Image (cartoon, rainbow, N blue to C red; front, side, top):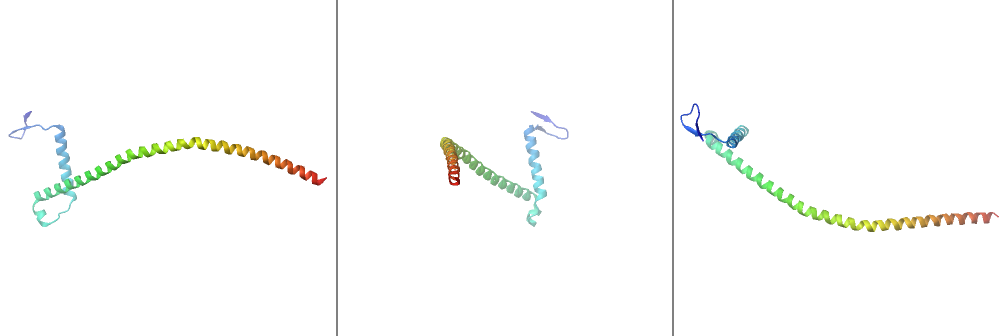
Length: 136
């Protein structure tokens, strides 16, 4: 809707809130860019409009490059998510397969230990008897 603003001689449209925010952000970015970058040459310093255009083109190029980097990182992350879950699932399946094998190995080792302890007790008793027999 159109509205007459005080101090203006023409009717202009009232911008929406998002358009106003976008315009404010753009002007802030432009002002910061102007303050940060030094004058590149005498020709650029002589023509402020050209300087602004150059800064905007540089900003546009930088945004495009950053977008490409972000896209590449995102694609790598997606690839990792897809292949990482498959690798993890395969690792879990192989570990679960080893559980039964290791459990049987533990039981077998415990049985061998018990058998060896019994043999040690028997050999100690035989040794004690041999010592007694030699003493007589």
